[in-house]
Length: 203
Ligand SMILES: Nc1nc2c(ncn2[C@@H]2O[C@H](COP(=O)(O)OP(=O)(O)OP(=O)(O)O)[C@@H](O)[C@H]2O)c(=O)[nH]1
Ligand SMILES: [Mg+2]
Image 1 (cartoon, rainbow, N blue to C red):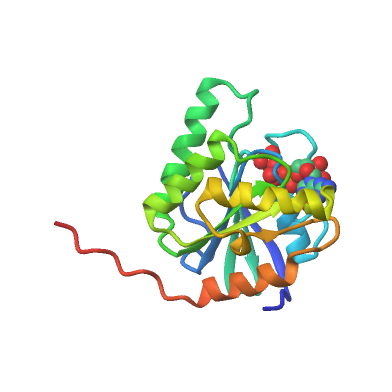
Image 2 (image 1 turned 120 degrees about the vertical axis):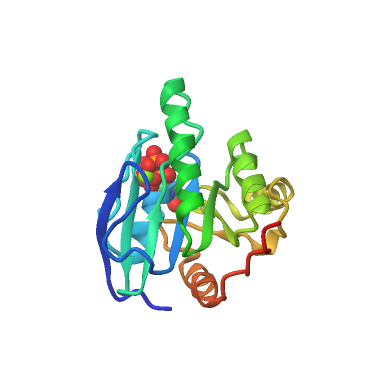
């Protein structure tokens, strides 16, 4: 897949109607500061498309981007940011719960983890949620530019074990060098073209 156009659509304090709703979606989830917004910019090759910051907790809204006039990339607010109040944590939980409930056209979740660290409690919760929900997901390990080959070789199995995926299924990613871009675009294209899993009939 090539990205030919990428435009900001809207910021939502809670998931609801917006122009173009109903197109397929790919959501980007992960801990605060893991590099979700940077990944969107590097993937789309548009500087400043998604607002990034070295201070965690920058993205507090659900930001929607339209790609190639054909699908939406969703920049979700990050979890695990220590400095937010209990009330804000609760509102984060509500926002995400509502999003995953209502996003009927969600094709896949791009779950980002930092390649340098053992997955956090929040990372493992997100992973458990993804497995439990049956949503397809792709794991990408961000900030790969910060590790040597040898360090990376050590970390990939650690990430894989914690997230119950195969090491070779994790996409090493760097928003600085562009590493992982082709691989990720291929994976996203596959996700977009996979028919939605049919829901079990409710009892
Ligand atoms: N070296 C390096 N730095 C990165 C990479 N991706 C992001 N960063 C840096 O990490 C910091 C956080 O990046 P963001 O993209 O704003 O992170 P986020 O996940 O959107 O954070 P929230 O919106 O707070 O949830 C910024 O200082 C980025 O420059 C990467 O691949 N390599
Ligand atoms: Mg962000």
